Length: 615
Image (cartoon, rainbow, N blue to C red; front, side, top):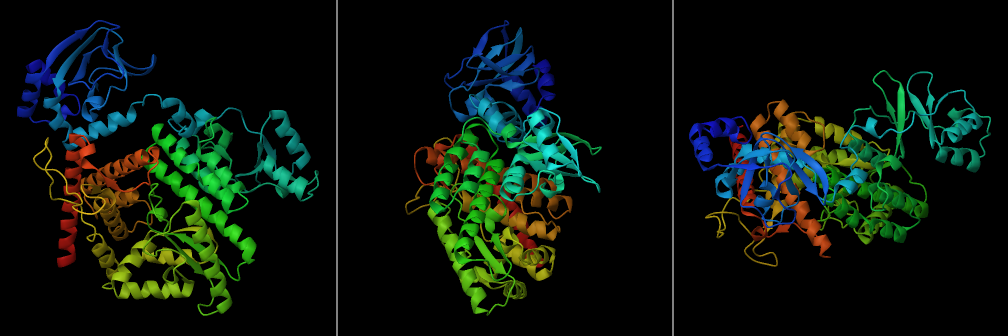
């Protein structure tokens, strides 16, 4: 038993146990030996009642005859299926003679509910492949490695004085859809087939004109070690199809295209984005966006992390909004003054799910009382908001939309409203308005509304801090208990109405952490929009302890993952996605982790409440 304990002491998550607990676990271990080639767990079998820790040898994880991963000394297997209560996802086969320790579910369930156990689960389960999803994941989330691995050919590079004819010939000879143009001052421009068609064919630019007449400059570029998924999201957001990859020394290594990043099937983010850009009217937009839910389901099944799926949904919503604005302006005529369309709330943070409302605001650079400007902006806001609703992006039922007079006004009126809210933090309207604006992000336009957002995020005045601190205490996680057969105490649920017996994961989990991060981020001087980045900035600035920030981030990931998983299953069944989860459908470990996460959030809120009282 001493030898077993000494071995386990060196392996996570057992390395977090004290001596007494370690001896208890070691005392229950059974020693097993399997010759090379032995199938230890078959695929699609009943959930095992034990987990195994490899002492010597290795184990292959096999999906339908294909080896996806190999585990070695200290690795554990069998726990995903055991914890979820689901059939085994892989065949586990001894690659070589295998010695392992077998531990019962009863022994390890409590261990996995501890912080060290949860971290181990998060790290190992995310790192392992998912059955049947690897091919799709390679198409929609190619960034399992750096972008340099995706480059196929060296780029075509031209000088600024190269003619369009010569550049087109060089592209044709290389079979390339683009060429880089070395700029005299530094950096690169980019010339694409689309640019040639637009400038030379459509606009009549002469063939002997220099490439600078048709190129885009400066080109958005990335480094060779950038994760492919981040580049994919940036390409989707910017609506571009080519990204030069530049070495640290400033030399071009290649050009990454959307073709390199998308799968052959049509349910990919790039295909969806191009369909949106090509839509001629609202009806074609609706048809394009009709593929969003199947795309989200495919991305989820492929193992794309929830945060990246949320970003893609937000990018699609942004693209639809911009296209609707452009379609509306074709009918209304040019805007009488510059304006900015803002995404608010979760859309502003790019933290949206299929059930999320579209919160928005409109600000224009002009006179608040000018009837022409006000009339145009109201018509524009109404058309875009109605178009979004018709396509499937529902407006906030509480009126946080650009079509509401409260969220549609001149920049000067917005500046006065923000000032009044900060000076009168006791007003409930001020609480809601500031929280939405603090998360705001410009989606369209070149007006000066962004200056207001910058001023707001830099305004670390006591009144604003207390305003956001109050908001951080409004949404409280459920910390009472509902009894379950497998646990004496568990979760609070709705007691009446259509959601009786269900848990509101948004109200009780997501919103409290987002509000804490908003306050702590402002207190730390963070200018970022993401909840996770705000928490990290608050920890770096000492506004939250590292443990508090890590706990909140892990809880946020849990709530977000469960929320998205729940909504994915609803979409599969043809139901409207919502945030009400049935706790009885969760396995006991997840319910226990949920309860601990709710208590951790509430603990941080209590500390903040003391700051509000005595600060």
